[in-house]
Length: 319
Length: 271
Image (cartoon, rainbow over all chains, first blue to last red; front, side, top):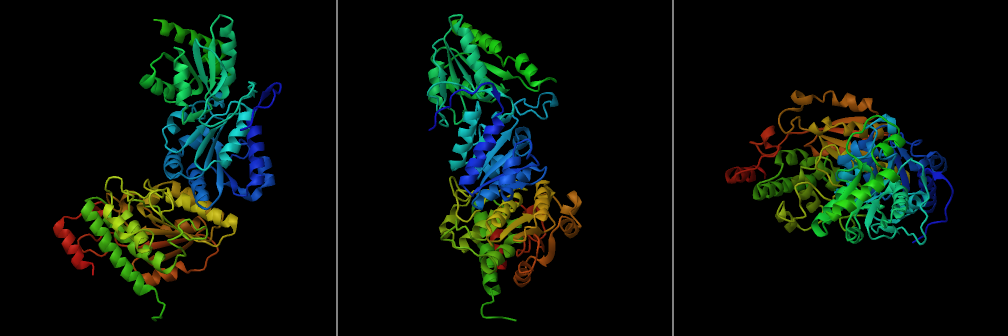
């Protein structure tokens, strides 16, 4: 288990980390191949293609056969990484993901690029905010959402070594490094990034750094917020979620629909075992036209929006 | 010309056993898809007893030829051919569709040795077969990949994505067999959403096309041996319900199941 590297300044596109880690894995393991749907550029796979030209299978704009070919490559002894815009990978080929990958339990890595609302103004056809709800119930499929470049690389390396289907949900949105001493990546185990006993903020992916910002702001008001990085949506870290519930108030934050994703998973679990107010920050459904930044602000995926949700959750707990 | 090692008698014997055994399974379970089982039976018996390279003791052998049952509902044919080929004991067939049986209504590779991928929803097996053939090409293996689809199944668009990719990549060790019985669940294929001219469609996608009688093992053996530099499509003309007089060419036998009298009559005819 590696620990996070020291902080690099500024914001980073996690796709750089994805492709660098993938190339390292591919150099070490000949079985690794990539399958794309004309998505070499958007998956940042140009240099992979140069280094391993025979190991990049471009099926053209055809997501159903793309995922089916992934299953077949696994049958033939390869370790395929099927990389495409997550809206098409999960939506267009959902039945292939269900039947050919999860149910058949093939050793295929599905890599959803530009997930969430990364495509901003291109609109809900190109957004992928439903993917958690679609994929979370699928038996055998591990769902991982890295928060920064380090975690992206860790997730890619883990997926390459893990025997079984994985969905890696990546983003093109620039994010800062998450700097917490002793941070480790272990699939299925949430990271406690900050301790606190008044409320717990459970975030994933691009929203983790915003949750930390909100916790710092809340500390100024005397509210101690615990922050968890929920990098694994399936299987959920039940123990960490139930411990979080014992703070008395939970906020979930995800660049996804508030229906059926991280918030839904947390609500399912807590309602059964540790009933607690759960405020879900995310998108209510199809969103209007707007840039990524505007959408994040408008729907409360921000320091202020998350802090406000935390105050609401605490107030509901006191009723 | 009969040779000492002519596999046709064995294929015929196995096909007869498959039909009788599958129909008994369907009768006992009162579930199944016997019409499509019987149209595919001779094709599958020919593959397993005259064409394919495999070792039932090593179902994960990397160099094995693969057979993918894309029309996954035809489990009567698939389970009986795998049993006949030695992948599992015959008493497993008695559990067909019973609670917690390995023999689900649609095949699951995690339950049953010899099943290459899980099928059931139509249009899934063909793309997976293309992936297997690509893996073989990447590794330089000479294994062959055979995939059998129903003809009505070709109405699913994913098959044509697969046909494009295979044609583009000239996957010469991939063979698609279309079980051309001209009937789908509710009616004829041509009156539902017509497939003809099917041969021209596949040729236009870059495939070698061979039309064959899907109930003639000798003709099938010759067709499977056709030299090719590209993926090959065998359009196997078949009869849904083949072998039982009251089932032949009846769409209602897609998922019809026999009563005791029909079962007895079928056993008299299947000899």
